[in-house]
Length: 202
Image 1 (spheres, rainbow, N blue to C red):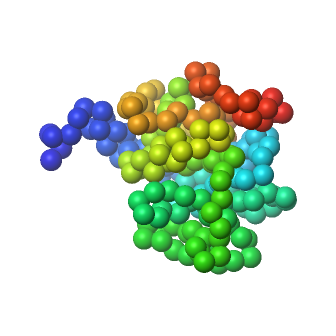
Image 2: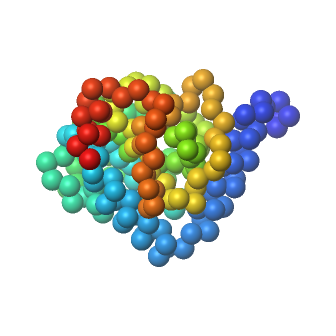
């Protein structure tokens, strides 16, 4: 089966394996300290009302404690329905449900669908061109194309950086990537008027 895959897919398979090992190699103290630093950096860019985030899994960056403390913001989490990613409102007083990927998501009977203005994106790896490597399902690429005016913010640990993430036609580069060490802005990506305003506030 491997020999039938195209070269880019094979490179991504290898990168995913390597980057999973790197992230799992980070101890809890290191992850927690880095997640706190990333939370502080993210705060400068949340100049909007509707914010889509995620519940972390597999040692991903965890900024949920910070998000729970936000005031006057409508938070949303990803849900896969009919093979498409949508965002449902995260009501902090309501219990989240465990899905088949063992991640938490809002109860569809409670959380309304939210149109995001900012999308905070998890990842396995990234490069200096703001290309992102995910788990290979393509849900985030599709949803980012669906909301082109939304500010996309990828968050990751600095050790997840690689020299090059092979890019395919369906891949969508992120506006920003934030690690515990720096903020990487996408110099090549065209920013809409709303996103320019958000960035200029920082």
